[in-house]
Length: 362
Ligand SMILES: [Ca+2]
Ligand SMILES: [Ca+2]
Image 1 (cartoon, rainbow, N blue to C red):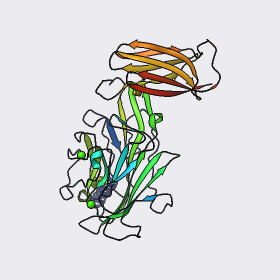
Image 2: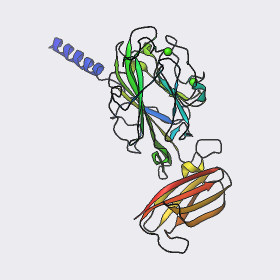
Image 3: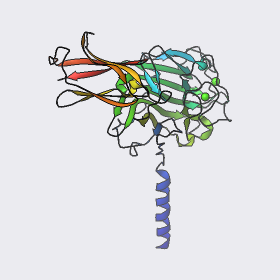
Image 4: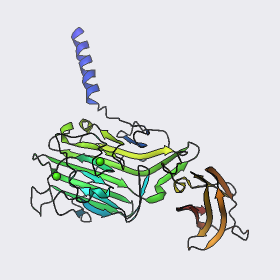
């Protein structure tokens, strides 16, 4: 009896140990630059908004539409962004660059051009790292060596694919080898782009939420997944805020997601949000409420256009005080006629900022 109790207790302990305690959430705080991270769907980081399920690993190295990156050196590849991405309170827009490194990271920082970003293991520092480049997103920062095997092999290479429909950028390091060993690692980073459509403001809960996700996906490591494999994490544009993910929690099939959630009211001239991030159009039974916030006294022009660019009405053209404002639009054009069903654009010019929101009239 006593023996079986001990066996039972041992089994329970083993089961507890066998269930990976990976749920790891960093609540959006000043310290983390409002990013959060989680890797376990059963433990979402907050109630609002609903998040799509975590993706699963989809290899791209054998996809004929994927680009194989060359030359096979540590010189980062400069990619011109086709769509916008919101990262640590900054917009990166079409035509801006994102650099991909064979060493398991990407960066928005122009200092990444030609940068080898040293400090290889075993001196793996946690993120953030003030050394340039900054704005680094690293699924597995290690001193990889993709020159160890000659082309045309597909292994020990990295690839990227931009899905224009889903606006997903996928970068895969495929059986990439560590510099100091023959260990191979296969993993991905996915950036969900999509411009302002992916930015949501919710006045009720007073948050701004961005669906510009960053996802790290892990496939296999011939060395297993240990803290010695490299650094996993991301940092802001100054390299002073960031999050390190405990590398010993990585595993085959693990997915980590990061996104943005910040307070709606955090509107500062030099701070997190500009008026363009706060503009929202809320449909009412009759007409629309247009909300926006200003960091200071600002001249604001709000106009309605149809999708062909035809001007229908000026809703406002005056100076507003700092703070949050709501403007009602009855859904009529300048002559007081109800506008027809269709898609319209509300354009705001607020000081140096310009932005538009789509409005669907039913
Ligand atoms: Ca840095
Ligand atoms: Ca390297």
